[in-house]
Length: 186
Image 1 (spheres, rainbow, N blue to C red):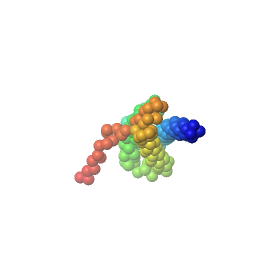
Image 2: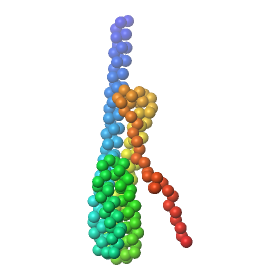
Image 3: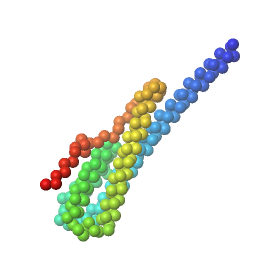
Image 4: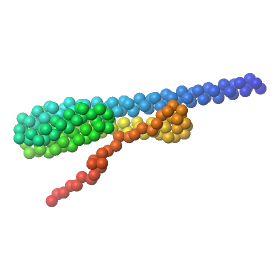
C-alpha cells in the first residue's frame, strides 16, 4: 500500500514537473517567434529604406522640377531610419509609403520615366518589399495571437501568472489608413 502511494506521489510530481517545463518552453518559444517576427518587419522596412535613394536619383533625372516630392520622400525616409521602436518604425514606414504613392503618381506625368528600366525595376522591388512588409506584419500579429491565446486560456493563464507573462499588443493600423478611399470617376 505504501509503495503504491509513493508511486502515485512520484507520478503526480512528474506530471507537474512536465507541465511546468512544457509551459515554460512554450512561452519562450512563442516569445522568440514574436521577436523574430518583429525583426522581420524591421528588416523589410530597412530594405525599403535602402531602395529609396536609388529611386530618388532615377526620378531626379527625369523630373528635375519636382523638388517638393523629392524632399518629402527624403524626409520620410530619414524619419524611418531614425525611428527607435517598432511602433514608430511602422508609423514612419506608413508615412514613407504614402509619400512614395505620390511619387509614383507624379511619375505618370513622365512617359520616359515610366519606361525607364531602372525605374521599373525599383518600382517592382518596392512593390515586392511592400508585400513582404505586409506579410511580416501579419506573421507578427499571428504570433501575438498564439502567445495571447496561451496567456488567456486555462491552464496557460495559470502558468502565465506564475512566469510573469503578460498579454502583448498587436500592431495596429493607423486611423488614417482605415478610411475608405473615395473613387470618383467624374
